[in-house]
Amino acid sequence: MSLNININQNYFNVKKNYLFSEIAKRVNAYSAAHPDAEIIRLGIGDVTLPLSPVVVNALKTASDEMGRAETFRGYAPEYGYDFLRKAISDYYKKFPVDLSPEEIFVSDGAKSDVGNIVDILGDNEILIPDPVYPVYLDSNIMSGHKVTFLTGSRENGFLPLPRGIEEKPYIVYLCSPNNPTGAVYSREGLREWVDFANKTGSLIIFDSAYEAFISGNYPHSIYEIEGAKSCAVEICSFSKTAGFTGTRCAWSVFPDRLTAGENKLSFLWSRRQATKFNGVPYIVQRAAEAALSPEGQKQCRESIAYYMENARIIGEVLKSKGIYYTGGENSPYLWLECPNGAESWEFFDYLLENVQIVGTPGAGFGAAGEGYFRLTSFGSRESTLKAAERLKGLL
Ligand code: MLT
Image (tube, rainbow, N blue to C red):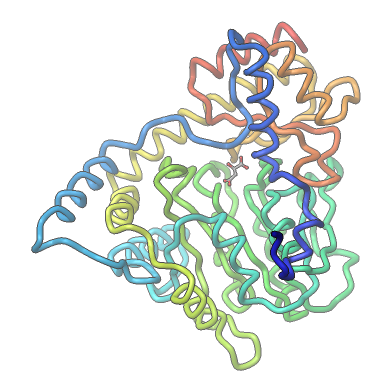
């Protein structure tokens, strides 16, 4: 017998599969039909280098502590251990941004925070860049919110600004360096957004998950811009920076002065987290703390340099073929125009079938991504070099 309940109808308004699940499904089907094919996966941005030694040591030490009665820990504090909140607040000093540990909320992933923040927000108008990381759109559709797109294009460098937009309050999602395009907002660009938000009473949700890949003179945190603490939440992650995609640790910043009327957003978020989340494991938080130590930072920088060299290798092939692309300089993603006017999914099939390379179709990041394609530099050097050779032969 079937249930006689109401279900959330908004789920019928999102695509049937999440973008990266759809890709995995298609690649698995190809692989089943071609069991001998050597597939190179440059689709989902999943890291391939192992955790750095300083992080592994911290995991081991913390595991030993968990195995002794005197140092065993149960539930972690809902918002993160003080030692990690303090380490993250110290990390921001180099930008320089001054945040107190109490303004930092540790979680199990930027994706979780980006998806969960809708819980504390009412029914607002949402502005979402297009193309962009699909979680912003999907989570708002699931909540039945009205979404307006900010179109990114070759003309605006995939960095839409608040120009020609009606001046009223919105929830604005920004991602810089952008996933998927790799485009990074300048100080001036972010200042326009912060000024717009403060003028209209809008909230910016700033996703800085790729900030550690910035090598140029760009802001790493939105709080580098004056006035951002009264209009922005920032969400960042250890996933790409310290190789934590499988280890899970991230944080969100809710500045003390971020209020809607009388209400502090930090209060709402802490209330949500206390009810629905039971904290990140102690051993993982110790590992994250180690990643932020001077030695941890050095080792993370080495991994990032390795990935950025991969990006350079792929970029060289695209350049040599005269293919327009962005990214790959301050971001691990390369965003290219599909050759010969191909559509994104068409190009996905073409690469998979002809050279067994998996990428991500631009259309999966929004309608404005149609005709584009994303390749990640998170593969191993060996597979990146192999992919470069195959692309050289094909394109
Ligand atoms: C991506 O490929 O866009 C990312 O891996 C997705 C994520 O971080 O959730």
